[in-house]
Image (cartoon, rainbow, N blue to C red):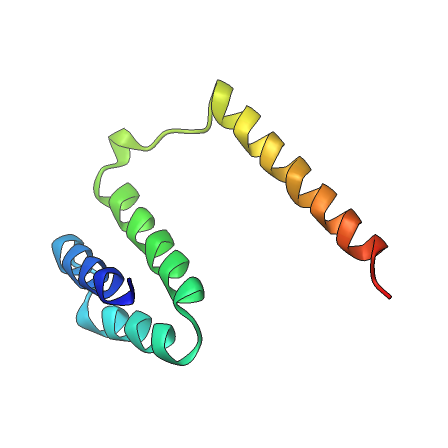
Length: 88
């Protein structure tokens, strides 16, 4: 799975012109910190680059987006309350 993620990172990074330094930084973060940390950081950087290259396509959250965000926040808060309530 990690090999596929690395291929995606390098292919997308080169396609968007992120720069080899950033790509190798994400690769090393994946190895030394965690893939679950480096991949979201890479995806955020990728999304930022896409947004800067195509400003007309950038959109603000609307309707169902806000519902999904609200549901996600409620789930996270419930998990937090449950976790804090069960600390020994």
